[in-house]
Image 1 (tube, rainbow, N blue to C red):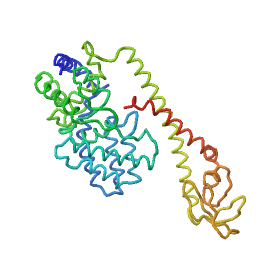
Image 2: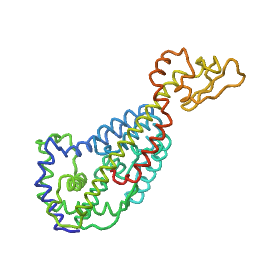
Image 3: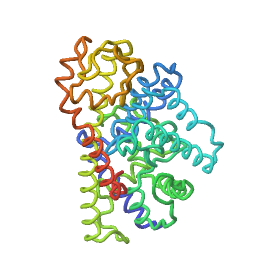
Image 4: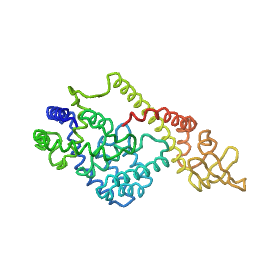
Length: 383
């Protein structure tokens, strides 16, 4: 570890401490989130399954922007908890089960959480980047639940910090990083933090009541793991590397990276817009399913009067008066072309209002697929 560079980082951190914690930036909020998270999560995990999604959303909202940012992994889990509360509740219970102090076992728990989250996304939001879990999000669920044991991982910040202090062991990339080298780097940083009296005094001063987050609202960071993450995070965000010589991206490489990240954000926005249209279409179909529930009378331009026997987002099965066997029809098509009518309250008005969007069903689905494929090469630039 390059001790000279690390000491310069510590010096810059103490110099900018007032600035990064003023009302405009308020980085003390991390301590506030850590204070609230476990209480709210324990409450959610003890709730009956029918109340779990609402309780989990309270945890989600309390995390502010620590987990949800460009992508929405925690929001996604809340949405999936609305559909399968028992599954998501058990995912968190398993993630928080005893790892016996073993990073290898912790990696397995994380891997299992990833696997189950993939299955839920594939089931309810196929191919969604918006709700995809990542190493940062899952490390945050662990870190915020028990900050004294875990470290919070944020890929680009950790990588540049490692380069600056000369830590070259590779923890990998992608969804499932190797915890041992990353935790070892954090442990080494922690050891140096605890030797630096000025830094410790600066950190302690966040509890003196002069910052936007009051002392009683902040987690008592006895093991200094939140401080570890804050230093790594502030290095990149608040330019604590300024004036420190180390091998880093050239100006041209940084420009290229920034351009690609900008492109990635534009493509992510286009993807989210496409998914929003698809979600709106799904909402329309689901509402029509309620209006045309089993047993509802309808009239078809070709087949005449009949009664709904079964209905889902793709098909409606109708037993028409003049046919012995039920007829299965594509639901979006007959709705878009107004091939059926019904006396169900509000159906005619709702169909008139939404027929144009229903006509675009194929293009909406293609739009999501196109946006997903366009984003895929740039996914690495989203964090």
